[in-house]
Length: 291
Length: 236
Image 1 (cartoon, rainbow over the protein chains, first blue to last red):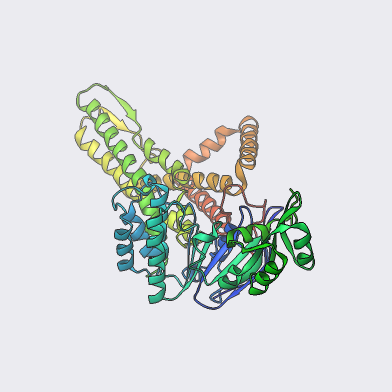
Image 2 (cartoon, rainbow over the protein chains, first blue to last red):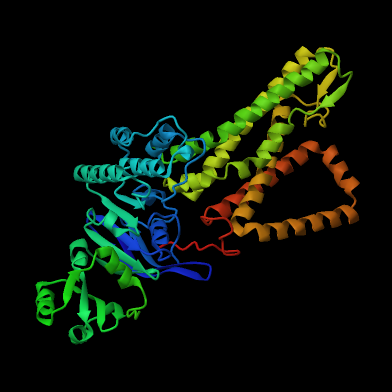
């Protein structure tokens, strides 16, 4: 469905995407995680054909997306602050959604508008942030594009609406499987939905892995320096904090029974690092941080 | 469904509000000028009714360029934006010209004693007919629109600094021509061969529209982001 090989892209002399490789052939939900400025938005623009690559190859359903009407018809990209005309209300947005997307599902669109309690006649520009996110979700899901990309799809939604969004997403995917890419910098908001997570750091994808495998990574050890240091000699330390004779470290390894056993024997504390913390430490340049 | 329908309908919608406002302004002016004639306030005079329409067509590319973002964000292409914008402008242009000439015609009936007269761009031609009047108006309108679109396109592609530099250069060039060339001869040629001038105007409009299309088909997403001269056109 999507294939990127050594894709690079620059704005003038500023390289924002460097040698990105990604292949996905299954209709699954992918989470795209990266810190601010990592290149998430640009990558999504390249995938959706809004920008053209400088080097490498990019293929979406076997087609190059840039300025390619046929390819762009198979992709829907809902931006974080999606541009809507000052003149449009919800009904206008749905009408244009139907005109631009050949797989448009009017019934689903109507259902979602009702579900999200969106006022049909009110101008979209007057919507709150959460309501603007909702209309983007409506268009993104009702487009039924084989590839749907949504940038920060839970931005501004309250807990109830997030739940509604997740249920609607899973329900429509069950009916019509398709590739969905959800971009975020708060992984906990979407990790339960995603089968795989792509981590983008310093303008390239550094990991593309099953969510379950990724969630198992990140071990946090705390206790006396003498007990911990021998255990981490051959480990990749992501973060290290020192307080007198005590230290706490985060290492890049799978949280396993083996670690629980080692910790018990050494008399130190061990716990699984939350995914978001692991990703932040994984993508920061300072591997060791002495305090 | 044809994939052009979406971009086209979107641009028609975007331009509609400005068109309605503009048509209303022209209608109000039409009523006002005719009242001046009916009540004999203006003993005689030439009034310009086409002003608002022509000004708006000059500004349309600046007002409605937002359609570019909307079309791209809904999955349309740059080419679709350009063609949809051009087609919508041609349609609104044709309706505007018909409306304008309808007002001219009604004025002749309302003001049978001809105390007021509207200036028509075809007045320069001695023996014009309705079709010729429509054609001349339409050509001027499209010329005005093409001026707006080429200015906006250059501004959008190359940014403010480049556009202002280019504008400064053009002003200097025109000033030099005005100072050192015999403008009166050029004007004579225009007025003596007005229909030929109209054809040249149409050709210029076409050229401006073509250049704008060539710039926009690979235009950057944001204003001024085009690398000077060449935006990457690589396809793989």
